[in-house]
Image (tube, rainbow, N blue to C red):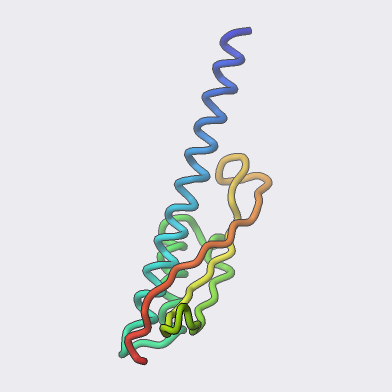
Length: 111
């Protein structure tokens, strides 16, 4: 009885850790894509592609399906925003999942 409870607790901790790892990698990829898109010699599509490449390499292609880069204004400054909607695994890498939305921002050098 105790071993089943400890196993359930351990698996829950592993699942939360894995979900936080996926979230951190997705945030990092979005931020890196925003930095690439914000460079004066690059455009929004190159930032979105960089984000897709990073997500595919680190998590798999299903995490890179919904990537959008756009120009926004935050507090009067031109900013590039890369938004990623990706699955948040509920049971390991496979299985049912929720959806998370994260964004990365960088000051637009071209403006």
